[in-house]
Length: 193
Image 1 (cartoon, helix red, strand yellow):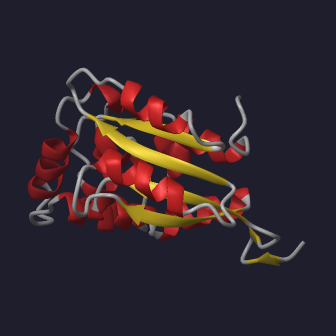
Image 2: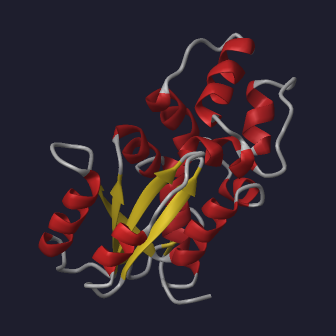
């Protein structure tokens, strides 16, 4: 075992992470998620599926291509307030081994709002939510959070850039079950908990 700056640097396992856009990619390429991965013995390759074509069609296409050296493949799919049918995703992943999906309830922005420590640093006047999965429009909440604190306008990419290097995942997972479920996939080596 080799330790560097407190992180386990043994043989890492690689996960192919599929995301829905540039802001998601930016967040998962950030320092805080990479630190979590290193502690869990993983590294990730990230593929942004929002290029040409449908996200799920692209997901299935890339599953056929990216197999070599991959321990598991994982799709992070956003769900907002509307009903969400996962049957199409489940139909795709049942044809492959070690392929999983994680639904980000109320999108990744709800994960950001779950870090009460960082949210309070941005704006002490914010009312914190015990469960950020119930916030109807977390993007709007974040936009107002930064604006009201005099920290300027931020969009989805700006939120991801900010939280990618600041989010406290241990804190955030206590206030968002979909984030906790996502992190547990790595902690349990993609086995049923």
